[in-house]
Structures are given as C-alpha cells and as structure tokens.
Image 1 (cartoon, rainbow, N blue to C red):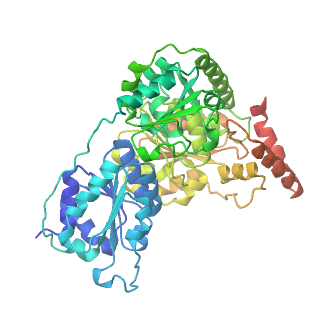
Image 2: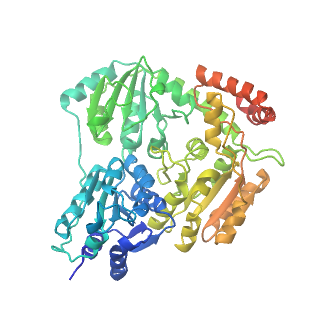
Image 3: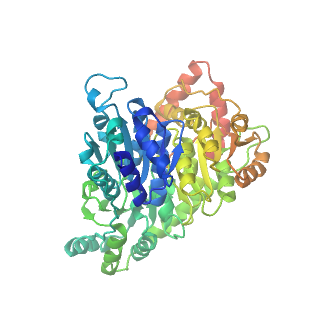
Length: 574
C-alpha cells in the first residue's frame, strides 16, 4: 500500500519539484522516509528551519515555480514562520509541509503541541489541517493550486500518524499554472489616455509588476516622454537598456528619482506596491495599474485605477496616446539623474591607507567583477542600500532579497535556495555582519550541500542601518555594537575559502579570487561604520533628529563619534 507521505512525494515529483528544504524530526519521519525511497527529490538539509523557508522563497522567486519546505511538529515548523512571511509578502509560490503531533493527542497540551493552522494563517494564502487520510490528495492539490495561482504560501498541517497512514485515493495530479492576459475596459483605457494626453509632465513609477514587460514600458515612456522611476523590486526588471530611467525613489533611492516624481503632473504607477506615502507628490494626479484590484489606492489615493497586467495594459494604451508631449520634463529629469549618478559614483572610491573601506567602493568592485548573469542577494540593512545604488542590472542578472518583509539574515539562506536551483550560476550573498551571525550555522549548510555560494561580508562591527535610524531620530547609538570574529578565519574553519580585506588596495585581487574560486568562498571586508546612506530628501524632522543626536552624543562623552562621522561623510556634502 502507498502511504499518504509517499503519495505526497509522488505528486511533488509529478509537478517537477526537485528538492525539499528542511530539518528532519520524528513527526516528519514518514515524509522524509518517502523522499528517501523515491530518490528523485533531493532533501536539502539546513541547520535551521527559517533558512529552509528562505531558501524555498528564493528558489520560487528565481524560477517562478512551486518550491517546497518542511518542518517537524511544534518548534520545528514554527521556525518556518519568518521565511514564510517573506515568501508570502514577496508573492512567490511556496508549499510548506508542517508536521503535527499525533492526532489522538491534539488538544491535550501534549509535548510540543501548538496550533499551526492558526499560527500560519497570517503568512499564507491557504492553510489547512489534514485530520484524516481521506482528505488527501485533494487538499494537497488545492494547496498547490492556491500557492501557484495566488502566488503565495500554502501550508498543509499534517500529523505524523496521518503521513504514515495508507492513502485512500493515491492519485497524482499535475497543476498547471495559468497565464492570463488582463486588460482594462475600453472606456477605462480611453479615460486614462485622455488624462495622460492632457498632461505636460508624466512620470512612470515601475515596480516588480513590470517583470516581463520591459520593452512595453519603455515604449510607453517614449510615447509619453516620461522619465521612469523604479521602486527597489522593479530595478532588475526595468533599469537596464532604458534611456528613460532616472533612478530609484524612496528611503534608499536617488535625489533624481525623488525629483522626477515631485515635478510630475501625473504619476503613472505600473505594478508597484511602493509603501512610502511621503514620497508620492501631493499635487499630482495618480493612475495605478495592477493585476490585483485590491491594491489600487492602497498607498496613495488614485484618480484612475486600472486592473490589468502591465504588459497587456501598456500595449492597449500606447495606440491611444497622442505622442505630442513636451520633452522638457524628461530632459530635466535625465540631466538631474546624470548629476545624481555622478555624485554617487564619486563616493565609490578607495579609502585612504589603513582606513576602513567605503561600502560604495566594495559594491562597485563587486558589480564590475561579477558574472553577467549573477544573482545578487543583499541582507536587509545597509547592504540593500549599496546594492540598490551600485549594482548594474542587464536583463540577465537578478537582484532578490527580503524587500517587502524586511528581515535580517535573509541573504545567506536565500543564496542556498538560489544556488541549489541554479548550481552552475554565480550566486552572491551580500551579507551584513549582523545578518550573517544571526543564522551563522547556514555556512555549514553551504559546505554540507556542496553549494559554491559566494559571500561578501560588510563587517562594520555594528547594526549599521539601525544606527542610522537612531541618528535620524535623535538618539545616541545604543545596543548596536557587534563584537565580531575574523569571518574569513571562521569560513576557513568551516570549509569555505576565506578572504579578509582590511585595505582598499587589496580589495580587487581578493574579490576576483573569491569569485573565481571553485567552491564556496567568503570575503570579509572591513567596512566603514560611519558611512551615511543619505535619503533623496532630508526632512526637517530628520535634520532635527541629527542635531539632537549630535548634542546628546557630545553630552554622553562620545564626541569622538561625531569627528569620525564628519571625516567619513564630508565628501557627501561637497
């Protein structure tokens, strides 16, 4: 007889699932043993279930296909939660198998008992408890379809005894993802065209929803003579081969992106869930295109909301546009972008001898030496800032991360999933020292699973972005210092080739050697702790905060910090 677990594995195989990320446990034994017997699906063993969920999230993001992770009962599957939040908020298809305590013990306060279906509800599009083998494989099929069609996380909570029970109806079904075209009505398109045709200054804000629509969005910009500002998740999809690109907006963005938005009469939002309300211009009209109607007007009131896929909506809209827009708005935005880009590039230079390296320079060297189809994964915090400003996209490179959930420690576990899915591709984790050490055990996963991941560590001995937030709010830095080991030596001890860089003059050779190494490699760079990542517009409140920080720092007897801060960042203000 076929067990429920064996039927699950057969269904996953039927749907081209090649690996499952997880950590074994007694309640999960039926499932892991079914994987062993099957032999066609690889068990990607990690050291923490959070990493399993992150790895699955990265695989789903890069492939667009269903990825799978698993955790044993109680604490085991609870560790999945943070990575599943990330996957769900990034809208990628992930199936999680959450093993549960024995059916007969549920509700008794049994060892490791939790209520997984309640705990996973907020981080999933579907979660269901399998109480009896008769529910399978139907619930599995529903869960997979929910994950694929809604692009989110589906969780099946299954007691260990149900996994080991005989399957009642052991069929296997292949779930095909649909590829629909969604276009607004003719009346909505006409109304939108009239608004756009009557505007002198249109700016496009492009998000992750422009994936696969690069040429159509560029053609739309040409027709409107509109600069294109991108949100962070739109960078990899629209920045490259785009004469209308004027950079990013938002807290991590460029002054030019902020200005192009602020000067617009109409902002055309394409496939974006850009969250920061303060960066939307108050005087402009807003048109939003999103395939999910519930997103319309969520971040800023819209004058016209259109439900549609970006590519198809752009193609339908272009013939309705007059093509007679003034060019001044675009020309001004491009000139401002050129100046902003030059200023940013001026910061990406070597530091003086015996000085900590500027992270801008580290990222620029990485960008130049990395493969043309490299996958970059920055940790949340300052590595995201440097990635957004100094990595160059080209249509083949990918840039993924925890850009919506915003959690520390995403880079290395997501690199595990990316490298497992693409073993021949260069995968680079841009790790903060805080993020790396939070899930340090996953360095062992990289070695054990023979994954040639490359890791660049920005070692500034601090939770650097948190310190910046404290400064901006007027607080003296507290509780943010990190006492770090020599990460290169740690890597060597684990079985990863380690490189340490304390001088700018040594960076290029070490970076090239690390990237070329046949196997996993880690390059630890002593980065400047006091480097400021200035937002595109500094508010009066932020200026006040920095003033308060300075006063409080002097009064606390730590005035030397201000001298270091000034000497490091003087070049940003000249």
